[in-house]
Image (cartoon, one colour):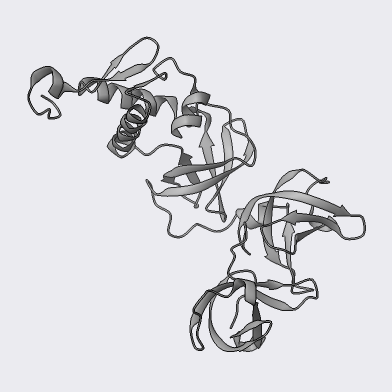
Length: 292
């Protein structure tokens, strides 16, 4: 059976001038318009498609992926407001996503970006959005998350302790101020990590991997950036956390640890300001090895 608002694996039944029809189980046959049909598609092929309702309320398939699926939360831009029904959000598909007035935590206006959760309205069987997030993100203990796991984050709100963030579009976690270093914006998308799964299922988050897992990839990133910039960079220990986050997607603490590792390996020197690449082989005539 096709699952409304999510990705589905559906078989190709037959072709028409308008497109191909897919087997939707209890939902019957579902049209995949020609513009979405992959080249070389044959009868009985199985395609991955997203199922939603078109402007005439018919089920329709697309091979495009929306910015949010049912059961997920994401930042979406308000396209327009209809005083009779609510706001419409851009979720990456031809038909905008309805945010009914009754589902708005506070009024929204065209041009706003809101954190919205996609769900199926039980009364109409249509996909709608809500900005009343608590009951959707405060779920039972999350399954499958573990310490050190990389995750996609969306900043939800600032609190006295740090920032509440949406984890993988489905759960909520906390980024402590001590693990951030730079001010974050509501709706900002970041790469992060699970630092701890606490009793009761609460998630503690960090923007950097721990220990060597954090430093080793970052040192290679810094070296690559230096090579692409002619052997030097204008960034060093005195660079601001905001500049470091923007250019290297890491905290200032992690950046300083990576610079320290490169300096101890004699692969960089500090030029005050900035850093420059050091090729030990040119100085010694021997192949360089870490720790030598």
